[in-house]
Image 1 (spheres, rainbow, N blue to C red):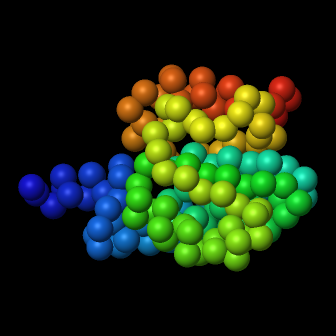
Image 2 (image 1 turned 120 degrees about the vertical axis):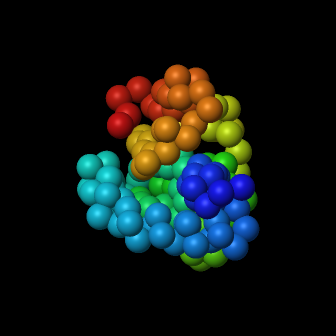
Image 3 (image 1 turned 180 degrees about the vertical axis):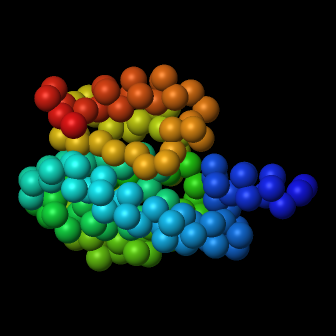
Length: 146
């Protein structure tokens, strides 16, 4: 497998030691976009927020600091990113303010209209079925949510 294929595969679903490097690179490269996304969400302390494709968990951490009375949840396809994000957000997870899961966002494991806000940064082009994933996001977003 050539280097371009290895990089492409790890951008879509980081795994192993190289996935850790890719995850770190993505968090640094997307830092300003992550901050901007959190600003655009106009979070309140009571918001329940979902991030689809949380990577190393930097945005999850930022969201949970503002939505500290709500629940910040995330789903990511990568076990490697799940482990990194769990480490980064361990305190908030132990406090019950953050929940993370792995899986395909085509089938979100959340109840209807639970989230006030949902975000996803640089992920849609990796989703196997973008239309279904967006339908699922719509299902779990409360009426009037963002």
